[in-house]
Length: 137
Image 1 (cartoon, helix red, strand yellow):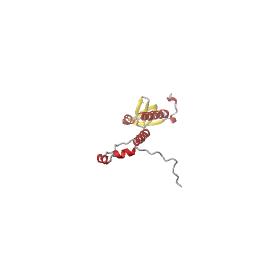
Image 2: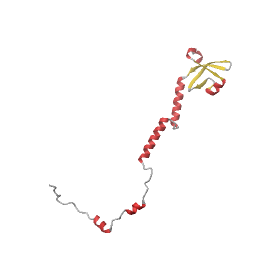
Image 3: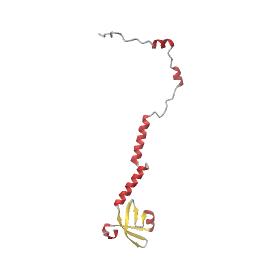
Image 4: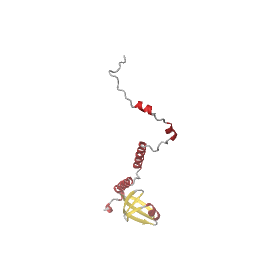
């Protein structure tokens, strides 16, 4: 299918054997990834230690691969925006609850005086409001 494509529409990439092994991620014999971009090999020529590839830059597959990578990063929690949002949410939740219990001072508790029986008996007496209510003027 690609053999009928005009050479002006193709990208020429050239690599040494070492560069082919280190810089290209091969998908199969006629397709590789180079610097995050996908290329389909249309024609190949070897001159000395250099291999020339006339390639079709597959921008649709490149975009698709990037979307898959982003979705995978999001699913695994490695997405920076997702991680930042999680951190903010955790900080918010922590602000809702007391993180540390207050230190109880035993001596301060003992210093509180309990009301006497006399005081308790007068605390229970309740007086109804005066009828009619008092006039201020």
